[in-house]
Length: 440
Image 1 (cartoon, helix red, strand yellow):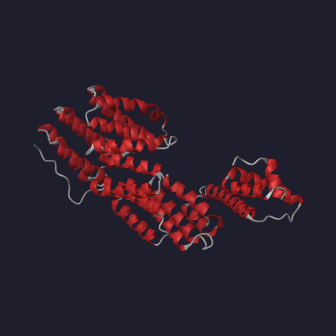
Image 2 (cartoon, rainbow, N blue to C red; image 1 turned 45 degrees about the vertical axis):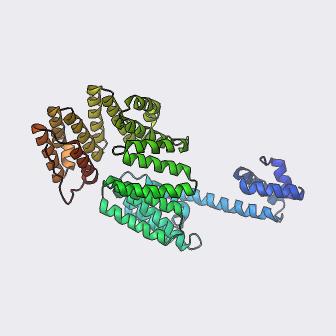
Image 3 (cartoon, rainbow, N blue to C red; image 1 turned 90 degrees about the vertical axis):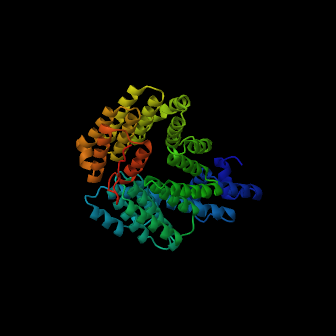
């Protein structure tokens, strides 16, 4: 059925339409938000002249829905205003007290605003604080708003996001505790499979960052099964891209196959996922020694890369460009771009990326037999004031050992792979057992 015109809507609501027309209109209004909003306005006008205008049958269901939608809309706007004002309070204590005492903060609309900011939190410390606000909001919601099971669902959402924030901060013990908390709440929740898949996705990222690739892929496989069963194709595509990210260096052919499956399922408006997938495609093709195809893929996504607002993704795009230059035989240009990437990493406090990029550059020089340049990479890691302050003693010892290896003889590429996994997991905190640079 096409949209209802203004006069047709008025005729139906005044009771002047035939039974068949009224039934069809009610069915359409239940499904079409645009026409339902118009019907609400017309009904308000009619009620102003006839306060006792009756609403019967299926139209009563429609107007109950209109009433609820208006209530939700007002709650949403009130929550936006409350959140904006609350965040301007001078101290965290005053913000916590405001959430405890203000009814507007005890609504699903307010909780969703806090959760959205929590997901975008720039730091681990801020994420922890926002999580506290979100949990307070949930605890204060009445049973008329959320059932106990739904409250557990929302607590699981919060702990899942907290786990991701802790992962990004390399706080592994705390990240796993947050995952445990999320899983505990999910068991008491409604059984929503989307929440389970979200938890599995963050668990997979945590495991991958710690070098536990097999367990990460198992978790992602379970994610894919859930999303496929629910026909959640955009989330299914996102999971396939994550799979490619895990295996890009160890199983590039598998990564490329995952990206081929994901590409037609990525929504056209999701430029971030499209760009991430294409950059991973470039890396997979480089690993498979197909640089000409990689160049074509890189040119295809270059405009998205320039326009993307996420600074880290733009820097990673430059790193991939440097890899591609190297694969195409332009060693000097590649080296210059790698150095620019490291400078950008440090400038934007992406210290994990800086250490990993330096190790990658070190490996390139060692593979080429240019021990002098490899030594300069180590000296940069040890001598840069910012990196030296960030690095713990175990990490400084590692770079010293790598410097000695460069000054004396080469080390195997498989050792560099192990050191890369070590850096990914322990760039911030030392490992229980320090790594050893075995010389050939």
